Amino acid sequence: MEGGNKIIAALVLGIWLMGLGSNAQLNSTFYASTCPNVSSIVSGVIQTALQSDARIGASLVRLHFHDCFVQGCDGSILSDNSASIQSEKDAAPNTNSARGFDVVDNIKTALENSCPGVVSCADILAIAAEASVSLAGGPTWSVLLGRRDSTTASQAGANTSIPSPFETLSNITTKFTNVGLSTTDLVALSGAHTFGRAQCRTFSNRLYNFSGTGSPDPTLNSTYLATLQQTCPQNGNGSIVTNLDLTTADTFDNNYYSNLQNNNGLLQSDQELFSTSGASTISIVNSFSSSQSTFFSNFAQSMINMGNISPLTGSSGEIRTDCKKVNGS
Image (tube, rainbow, N blue to C red; front, top):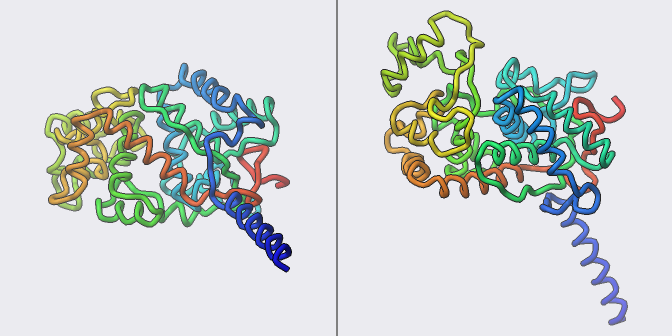
């Protein structure tokens, strides 16, 4: 009987370990044998895209961010409308602003040619985000991999879960807490606004009639305000874009935080990190402004933390052959 018990115990342990392996256990060597060149393939496609689109790196980071905040990091933001899916692309935070889908498709095509049916679209977004930051002069990190792609999407979730540029720090903090991210993660990940562009409609509320006061946002530097009013005239074209970082627009550095200290944050959600009285975020902004290496190490860790939000692993989900649609649809 004792030997039998040992066999049963071993079987139970084996089943338990198998369960662990299929439950959100991402690792950096997931494709080491099945698609060893995955990172260089992704980086190569992005480098080509950057030659004609300086914004693409920031856009790809944003796609990963907007994906992870809705149903977890599952590639759901990439799905087009279908009989069973209301696309997250049409949600308010994404419509006419989320971009880079064509580059994701190019990456997927390159990977399917090299290692068909292996790399998920959700993992492509995670790898592309790291490559984009690195190519812009930012930190590198070991991307944890093994996500699978969702067969569903949530347009309603995208409308409610993704932080908005118009929200208060309190509301945004709640949205980060809801997905298991800390205040440090919030400040670090906001630093992605050190490169890329934003449309006038995302900050023009600060320029003329802030919160119904009839005056501009008092936390906006007056010189910067005048510049932005020229770029975005009242009742003008809301889709015109301007740099998120007025100092080094296409470089990933810590100038974003010194901009906040000088009241030169572009979005309300940016400036509130520093200008909200008594906020715990102020000391973190100061820390990241004074040390780029501190910002870089925290940003890398926060990207890993974000990439760990509710991934599908093991036998859950699927590996899409086309990132725009569920297999067989």
